[in-house]
Image (cartoon, rainbow over all chains, first blue to last red):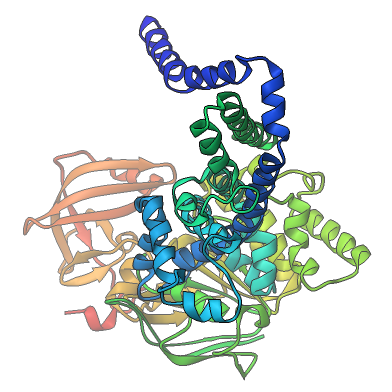
Length: 263
Length: 324
């Protein structure tokens, strides 16, 4: 018993020191100069725009990666095709690659001298220093999460239930919507939460391709940096709090919604 | 509806699961595919269901070529060893699934599900989830689910394999009764020879991807076509260069030309039956099955020397081409 209590207190202290301490510090700093500078910074037109841009990017990246992640997981687990192992490894690539490299990659593709840049510019499509590159960068870095959550769940589920559905007359589509998807729904939800968190918080790749144009291509995380460099600590910590609060709320909602294990 | 598999072969990687297998199942019959694991019996069943594609050969259902037909369109009900219950659905929704995907009217579905739940003795369990049922109840639910769309063929893959002995015996009897009422063509895969003999009209013994023999249970036991069938359908011992059933051997008091001397090693009492383990005069081991009464009359003791007589020519259990 004493040993278990000891272990538990080590875990709690560690969590306090590494997670909650810094988070508390952010709150302390944000409110350090009172509520007023915080309010001014958060209601600034460029800050509001930065939040809206981040939400727009997230609203595109999350559904795209959810569909891709589920389809990809089904392909990896259910279809025995040559190269499934390579696809499985490639899905992890964004986790292994530094986001800065992702940003530079987009430069190579869509820059003025890049592969697609000139021809797209000819059609009047601006990718770099505009919303499309921010969306592409965010999709790339948040790509693995849904697939990574769904693949092991699908493996564990096996395909007997789907086969039973086929013999009962269900089409592939009916089997997917009525059997497969409900069985993996919590894995999908977890993947979506992680994808959302990553999309909201992405900094490196977005920083490279954004161009930092206030009120145009500046996302919430870039706005934090902007404020910080201009010694507006209240503003920087204020945005940080809002971003952190969204993540905490999503996780909390998930914990409350999820049925208890074994129920 | 009759089932025909013609010259079916199937390979998984380097493992040849089926070698040119042909099988005929009469419409309305209850057939058991019997064999050890790896004999290809489940693969053959899955090919009939359309869950596997044969590398060669064809499958005909009711005389029509079904080889390229998807499982959805074969009109088969399939029951899996591990139930394959839809875990996120209630018992009622599980049973209704085959009717729901066919978009049958709600009232009809409700009536049919009630009828099936009564048939499998799960009335009152409709709102439970599979996790809240015992193994036997889950498998009965899976049976009701497979029967709901009124399949022309019912295929059961080791359906009672994961259940304990008492429940297994109960479900066996129940399946037999069900078949006598409905006469749906049924194929049951099992590795348990007692189960096959008890339930089926006809037993197909498989070994290493080939059919060894297909016959009614009694004929299989009395006239096995190979040493494998004889050994698989019950115990067999070598006696005087012949493979015989241990209950066809006799322990006798008077010596004659056909008897052999043996020493009793051990006597095991198994309720009605007693088994006597012996060593023959040439040192080879032997086992004789006796009734409890015979064992008592003989007053057998370990260490005792007794006389053993084999079955006469033409006696049940003898395998003509193994004689010698």
